[in-house]
Amino acid sequence: MSGDLSFIKQKETCSWTKNEVADWLQFIDLSEYKRTFLDNCITGQELVDLDNQDLAMLGVRTLGHRKRILKQILNLINSNFSDSDGSGSNSETSSNSGSVSSSGSNNNNSSKKHLAKNLDEVPCKCYYKKKVAVVTINNSTSLSQLKRKIKREFGRSMTLQYEDQDGELIPLKKDRDLKTAIKYCYAPIRITCSRRKRGTKKETLSEAETNLMDSIIDAMVVIDMYGNVLFINKATEALFGYAKKDVIGENVKILMPPIYAKKHDKYLFNFRKTGKKNVIGKGREVVAVHSNGTNFPIHLSLSETKNENRHIITGTIRPLQNDNIEEELESLKEVDDPVIVINSSGVISLFNDAASEIFGFSAEEVIGDNVSTLMPSPHKENHDYYLANYLKTGKKKVIGKTREVIIEKNDGTIVPVYLSIEEKANSNGEKLFIGMISKRESKKPVNFLRRERGVINNLTVPAILINDKGTIQAFNEEAGKFTGYDMSEVLGRNVKMLMTPEHSDNHDQYIKNYLESGVAKVIGIPRVLEAQHKNGTAIPFKLTVTERKDGDSTYFVGMFHSS
Image 1: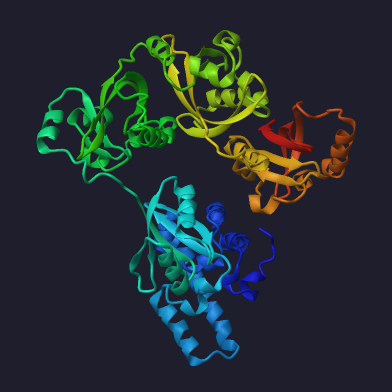
Image 2: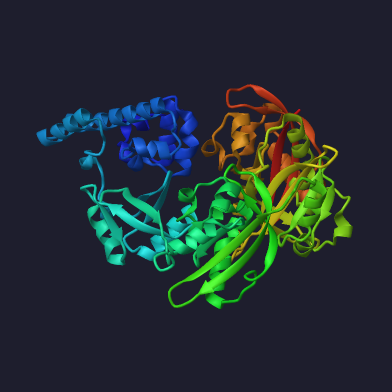
């Protein structure tokens, strides 16, 4: 928090920046929600329009906290009106103030809102199920551009409706509909998003077909050409732990681990476009996910039915017995995606052909080596610490999740991928970790800083990124917990603010000497130091620094570990 809260009285709430909104949250003792408000770009203009549902979608789960925020928003609005009255406002404004106060809602505060057409940047608050996102448009934005922005937020194409001043939902089908919304709606424009379903009307199954499939002992799933589930039989309900009503109408990806789900739409798109059958008509071993979130191996065979009335794909599923972990591991060698298995010391015990293809190493070259061989700095130096910390605490930060990480190939190339990790135990009770990798598709190169920030944000230890001037460029959530600072308070400032005086006075010179001489005195060498917490206390910690290059520019990643 900046410490200067004069803006609360001096500035109209609608003109607050998102950082000022975050400072206001800390001022009212609700700083735990600063991060989500910043991530969703909640400025003063969006703040005065928030309601109970909005706050729940933003992650304010406690009813008492939602009530407190809404009450404080109402106080701000009434304060703005009082200031207006004191400067000669007319009776109509006073009347409006009274209506806001009596209704307990800020939706009547139209005199303090701005018509979207009068703004250079128009915020749109987009709702999808329990999620909310804010995107910005302007008067020249087309509907297709808006849809692309929303797709980036929610990961899928959407059907859109905007809420007019009477609360009616109006479909957004053409550019002129969006122009109308901008012309007549107050900012932010509220947009309701729903999943766009295609092709499901023609491809319904007859009662005779569904009855027949329900009598079959194998699990069966029928989908259309866009992945929408048309039918699952009783065996599928038993195998996956879902009821029919929970799956039919959803995308079949809900039955897959994230690492497969991320690619499934692309498979279907390519099949619709080319007609090329890569997996249809064949049986293969893959991994499925139960409704409780656990993964299990299955044998999947796909068949296609196409005529003038419908085009569907039927999957027949048989669970694979995995009581023998050694047999299960052996079957992973045949999985199409890269798979790596390590033990509790990080040593590689399995490296399938697909992994060889993406990394450029043969299995013989890496089996028996530490998995850090496949990682660039700073992960290479710290992976053993991550693993030892998990074995000590049992706290799962990455296991069972899919994350975007970077790998280092045999030729030194760094590639972004998706990684999913699952924990197993062998017949001797020893822990094994199964990593499944999916290559991240990218049509254009990832900006260096954006990539580095993504990596640092995924780390489970405090980490920061600085440039060659010592200016902080990235600061993850764990670093915030460690130092007491919020990201908005440190980005763009010199890293010396996090140091005790004995180190901060000379830090700029340390960097300058290294850049001139090239002599690494601290890079790659863990050191025990003290950090300066926001509250002024000194915190002992172990620091590891690694160097990163972006062309001629030099950056440094610092990771903090408990000393």
